Amino acid sequence: MKNLQIIGQSLERWTSTCGLSFSLIDESGAALCQTGGSALPEKAFAEQFWNAEEDQATAAGTTLFHIKEDGETIGLLAVSGPEEQAGAIGPLAVCQVESLLSAASGRNDRTQFLQDALLGHLTDRELDRQAHKAHIQTAAPRVVLLIETSQPMDTGIHSIIRTVMGKRTRDYLIPMSERTCVVLQELDERGSLDETDNISHMLVGALNTEAMVTARISYSNPFHNLSLASKAHQEAISALEIGRIFNAERHVSGYAHLGIGRLIYQLPRDICEMFVDEILCSESLEDLDSETLHIIRTFFDNDLNLSETSRQLYVHRNSLVYRFEKLEKKYGLDLRRFEDALSFKLAMLVSDYLLYLRGKDSL
Image (cartoon, rainbow, N blue to C red; front, side):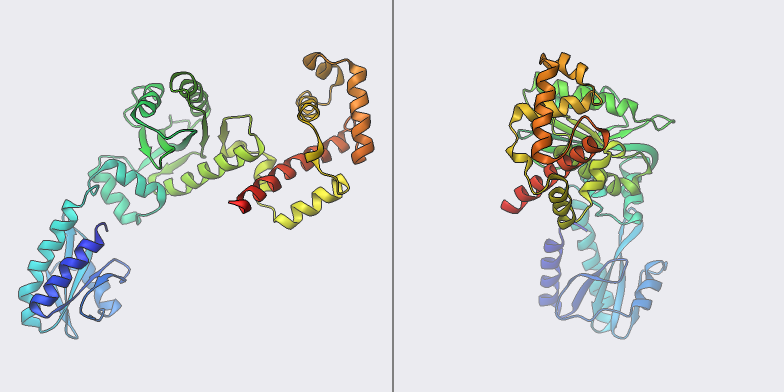
């Protein structure tokens, strides 16, 4: 429930005026706010009354009332004190609480509802109720597409995103922070992510050329019910972070295509440090200059093909052989051999992860 502070202040005024104590209770029986040192009703009593049709019920000096929205109970108001007085004052307090909830900014706002769904702030009951009110279908194949820009987002950036997405009435643009937003995209019946991947690359290009901002985009696995939007949002966040660590040159990352980076991301730090020391014989990749690293990465991208690497880099084949021989002397690994190349590639990835962790430590 929103505006609990305002509701609490209102109930405090009721307490000071009539001397009764009030508690606003959620479906689990927990108190969202209390006044006057009021005692909570028995959990079984509250659970039974939640789905009861009567307007009020009293037990052990506490009278319960329904707090409703669109005819459905969304909370209970417990009034502690003489039953006759509670029966007279309670309905008035309920009316004020419901009015405050109805007036709460964003209560009926579709964007606020979708933000809450993505952040996992809603129970299944609340999600179904608010989705119905917002005319959003809960059961549909969707994907969470997370967009992060190098500069704060404004209406111009949002306009570019909407233009690229096209006139799709069942896709929703949801601002999440100063530099991030989510597109909740509905998929076709096949649930294929091909279109999502294509749109993501188009968005990166459009934002770069039209808004002059650098964007990174990630997307979740498909899901088929809005109740799973929070999990999908976490997948997109993980994909964005893992992509930034292990594929910095790529600007689009799908959760299902993170490869070995996702595995390394879940390893304990001490295991990573031990592996790097073992493979590189306590040497550091930070000693390598950018040109050598570029040669190594190009060599790996060309499946250890010396001739193709030489052609792409405009470097004589013998020069590449000489560089790899120097690396072998330093690290004891011949990158022309598959096993050594695999070990070195893993060491590079793990080193990137450790560098990222050190950067987080320094913040």
